Amino acid sequence: MKKITTPVLLIIVFSAILWLTNLFTKGMFMDGVYNALFAHNLAKNVGGFWTPQTADYMHPSYWDNPQLSAYFLSLWYKFFGDYYWVEKLYSLFCAIAQLVLIASLWKIYFIEEEEKKYAWLPCLFFLMIPLTSWCYSNNLMENTMSIFTSASIIVFLLFLRTEKNLVLYSLIGGALILLALLTKGPVALFPLVVPFFFIWIERNFNYPKAFLYMLIQFLVGAGIFVFVFSMETPKNFLQHYLEVQLLPVLNNQTKTNASQFAILMQLLMALSPLLLLSVVSFFFSRRIAFKYKSFFKTAIVFIAIGLSASVPIMISAKQNKHYLLPSLPVFVVGFACLVLPLVKWLEKKFNEHETERILTFVKTGCVIVIVGCIFLSIKNIGSYSRDEELLFDIEKIQALVTSENIIRADWSLYSDWALRANLNRFYDKKICMPNEASETKFYLTKSGEWGDRLPSTAHKIYSGKKFDLFQL
Image (cartoon, rainbow, N blue to C red; front, side, top):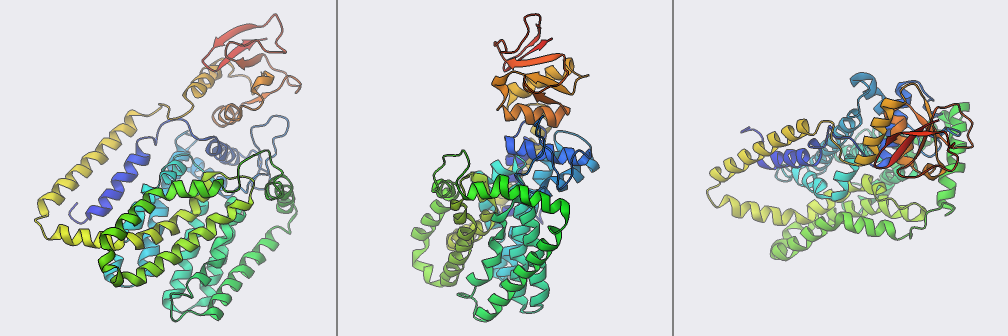
């Protein structure tokens, strides 16, 4: 314990509070359930990497997103087994990996030992953003994609600091960007332009080097992309992906009515804790700000990179807040640079007093909290963190329809995507509508309702809070 610094221990505490307590609970945001469903199908050889299947009965083919995230998760199912908590464990792994990457990014860029020791600061900021907790609690594809985009930026910074092996680093960077692209689409392309942002603050880095690095990255990624998608099955997936998902979103042909500025409001809300800290830092440390001019410039660069990853989402008709996750690791580095003067000032004041007893007290408190989180994670095994009524009902229904793979459902349940996803993910069952021919002995309706196509001879065998089940 003496070797673990207090800031690192605080990061462990924050992580335990955010994710450990709900690690073995049931329930996730619907996008995360679908990601788990695709991975579950891949692990059981249902569909394929380029031919994923969703929970729809009549039209199971899914073309909305690439499947690299689901593929990695499927490997976890094969290793750990088919348990509901595996997807949350995978998300926790992604969160820990992202924290390591953020700390590495800071330590690689700041070469002075005096600054290196503050690598914990952007990690702490990352945990302070409410969106971070939500994304890694819900098994989103962006959790995996962010690892590749952050790693690509780190590879560039390694070249920036060594000034050697430009071709090698740009080759690796291009490959990482392609992996990010295969995880969640074009939003992963922002690391391509990262080199140009550093021309302003790096004396030995100029336009020719930046252009060459970016060009090789692009050519590597494009070359592998063309090679992969020249094959028949990937080519078929790409064609459907463009027609079904990407082009309609870019042309505003989707059913969403979100404002194109919605993503900026989501970004402002996500970064609000860091913006507040930056303002406080400015007022408390403005007298010594001249000492930290270089940090201010660095902050501007990393914040600009974050904007290059988030602002282009405005052209999309879909404005979901979790699309911002890949930009957060660079934002937190930028804001950490702005708040660093305040942190150093507080550290100086703190060291002027007797601190050993205080640090011992803080560390002891941290250990108690961590132990408490472990206890809660065990206590919460099998409980619900989301969609409790839905999950409870389908668990009870499953016991009555164990021999059926298909359940006929009323038209009122057609767009209940959470029902479709969870029923298929956990029990390998699908619902079909009254006009979709399938032999089945059961009929599902909303609680308290009699279905439009339900025969008068049917009788209710389960009455739940969200659903009723009839036997035909």
